[in-house]
Image (tube, rainbow, N blue to C red; front, side, top):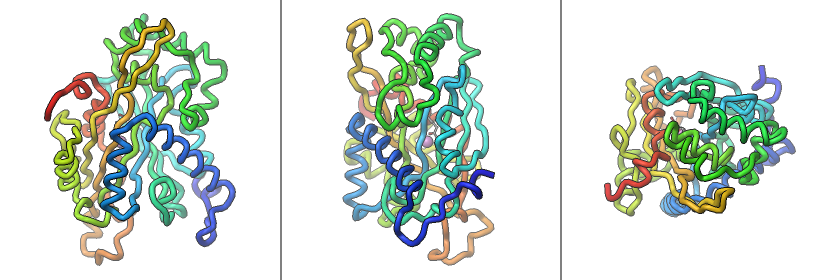
Amino acid sequence: NYSSENGFHSQGSSIQGGEAFFRGVLESMQSVYLNRNPTAKAILDLVHSVENNSLCYDHLAFRTFGVNGYGIDSMAGFFLDYGYTQREELRFPGKKLRALWFSPPADSFSGSGSGMNGPLPRIFISELLVDQMSPQTQEIIRKYTESSGNGKKYAALASSLGHLTWEKPLYSEFQQLARESEYAAWTLVNGHALNHVTISTHRLKTHLRDIKKLNKFLEENGFRLNSEGGVLKVSPDGLLQQSSTVADSVSFQFSDGITESVPCSYIEFAERFVLPQYENLPHTEIKEFHRRDGFEVASADKIFESTSKEQVSRVGS
Ligand code: OOG
Ligand code: NI
């Protein structure tokens, strides 16, 4: 069992070797993300300023191509090596995707800083079921993954450097993928880059800890939220509530010299409510593990749309 053998044993507040390295990698992934995504940066700055510079991440998310070792495992290995535990699988047959989520090592759940130096986030990694794509799309995905050498071994490194492990594609190849799967097109040009970070709203200190109030606050400040299936995504038990922005776009130079705007990353918000069996615990005793854990397939299905053309090119609200 990974988490008990490899879990961190932090001693006091001093961060020991492995954990300092691990958090350093997460910090690098985050700086790539903040440099490319002005909306995510502006929202984090805004929430930080209201919250006196302290917030926690609920989870980080990555996308992959499920083919020849480039799928979920290519990114998961890094997290498993640093004490994470694999949890449930989620399936999205309509989008031809599957995902796994991973929980952090229990004894480092209470990191005392903010962001990547706070409690370690859950990890959500999805993969495109490449075998189910059309022959043309499969050919493009196989061409880039196969020509990347041993790129599949360096997914976490690529993410922290902000570099693709494969060559830049032709614009026509991006378009072919986008017609069939916007997820595939996104992954071809963004590779292993952080797809989003998610702010844990119930761990905020001000009125923004209520996700409905946070959504209203963000919209009043001019930020556009993903409206697919309604802005607030609520799990059937009501205990996991999520919302997200619409992805930023970046200008991407394709290998044939064409420069076009492509969707980049977004930021998400999640409020996890206390489980019914802990309802009567005093507020001050409530820990993260007393709250609804995991993810919700119907909500996730709509959150994926945060990078879709329909949401990204939407005007007004
Ligand atoms: C992931 C969408 C799902 C969640 O928290 O359910 C998700 C993605 O867009 O890659 O983030
Ligand atoms: Ni998410």
